[in-house]
Length: 407
Ligand SMILES: Nc1ncnc2c1ncn2[C@@H]1O[C@H](COP(=O)(O)OP(=O)(O)O)[C@@H](O)[C@H]1O
Ligand SMILES: O=C(O)[C@@H](O)C(=O)COP(=O)(O)O
Image 1: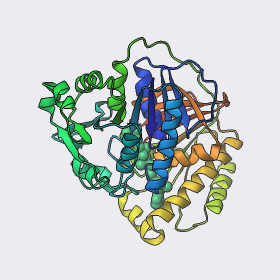
Image 2: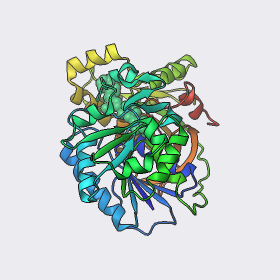
Image 3: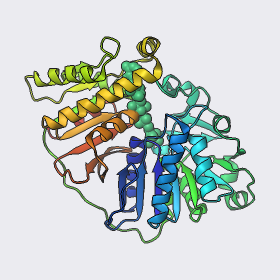
Image 4: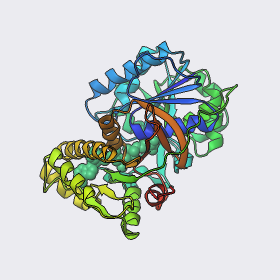
């Protein structure tokens, strides 16, 4: 069984849908699950909220997830990080990898953030986003982990004392097995620019106890698994919808502009004018209560890099994120209590805050609205569906269509 540990919640849904797409019956948990009788499955994803914050806590939670997975029949652990390698020099990818590799006594961990379905490719150790170097993509302005370098070994070396190497594309395509067996580096970034590369890598790594990367390599590993079977099906959920966004990613900003363009009611959470998250959330919910129509509304704090910098100068990066994540959780809880049944959340950290506030411990992976963006059917809540959208995922009209009455 493949057991994936994802470092954020949207990443968890992304890797779960990638495993499922290859026929693996996949269970998704938010946080380390308590002991339970599980339905039949071929893969388990434990989504954590460890991408940002203290490395010690990220390590402790990841090791707890590892313990759970080992106790539940996992023969291959997959550490899912972001396809744009979201992290800072402090971590948390390096510290978590060190801890997992030590715990599993693994000499070399092969990995790649390449995920061609999402337009991410790795060439000569450099990460590209839609053909643009990572550091020249909109990720350079991410609110919490701005990515200002594209060379993966350098990014990881800042986070670990272990050695880091690259297998260039030519070696991946001609001589992968030999290169893997003679590797001396603790971490090895494998170039991959298309799905065939990832399938070949997945085959070569089918017995590796620990592999890391984004959804692309998880898909490659899943293709190497024999005897896969049917799906866990869930009926679509109907009922009122709402969109909640804390993502400041370029694609989310376009999706929000589309919501506003089609005339959806929109309310902006402004932490500068109100820095008490409880009051901020109460004001947003009062606005929601006064809405006349039935069109799904948008509540958002998303803003472009210039405004974002201004907010962060006033409140600080961590404080502004904390205020908005707490407010988003309270708003989500308030919306569900008021009858929202399809809640669409943009942003990984924001999704973590929302899922935590709703007390959702896991769910089944439902229909995929766009690449890497599936509906999640929370355990024990057949009347509720969540769409946790990664900041940079989805077509421009995704928020509009997913929140339509027939979405
Ligand atoms: N207006 C804002 N000012 C400061 N921080 C913000 C603002 N809006 C959102 N944030 C914070 O930025 C972070 C966005 O991260 P996330 O939700 O993961 O989105 P993405 O998936 O686009 O990376 C969150 O911590 C969120 O609270
Ligand atoms: O790998 C990816 O790009 C996604 O699965 C992911 O982790 C995105 O994170 P957010 O942009 O923070 O939602």
